[in-house]
Image 1 (spheres, one colour):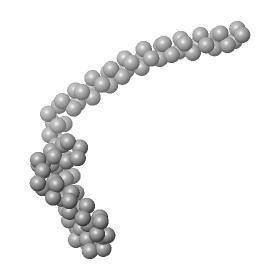
Image 2 (tube, one colour):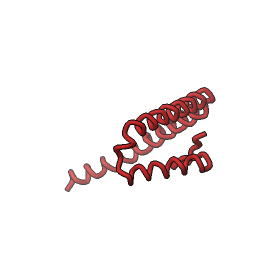
Image 3 (spheres, rainbow, N blue to C red):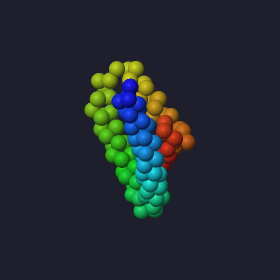
Image 4 (cartoon, rainbow, N blue to C red):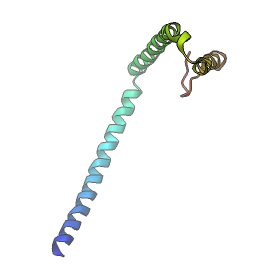
Length: 101
C-alpha cells in the first residue's frame, strides 16, 4: 500500500509540474507563431505561394481533363462540369472560404 501511495503522489506531482511547464511553453510557441504569421513578409510569401499553387492546379486540371475527359464516366464528368460552373458563377470563394481571385 505504501508503494501505491508513493507512486500516486509521484504521478500527481509530475502531472502538476508538467502541465505548468507545458502550458508556459505552449503560450511561448503560440506567441511566436502569432508574430510570424503577422509578419508582412511572411504573409506576402504565403499569398504568392497560394496564388502560384492555384495557377499550377488549374493548368494540371485542364491537362488532365483534356487527356482523361473522354474516358471518364458520365457521372464524374457531370460533377466536374457542375463544380466548374459553380466556381465561375460564384463569388470567387472556394469550398474552404478562401478567395480564388
